[in-house]
Image (cartoon, rainbow, N blue to C red):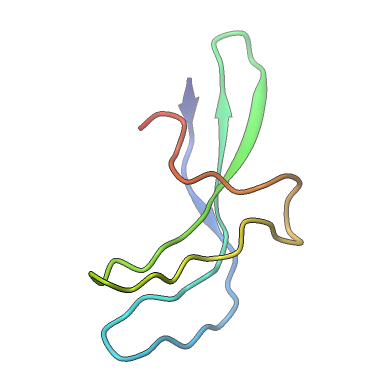
Length: 73
């Protein structure tokens, strides 16, 4: 399975100092060896230890729920 890159929406978000609470959709379209394509969007999380912020699991810009990690990881 391969992908050709990662796209992102460009909505402005504000985070507390030192945190990353950016809930823009990161999306990748994967293609299998038979040419079938499926688009995934990643559910984002803040990397600061002890911070429990997690982005939305759904968005208006794509169908279905976001994934917690890319399929090829």
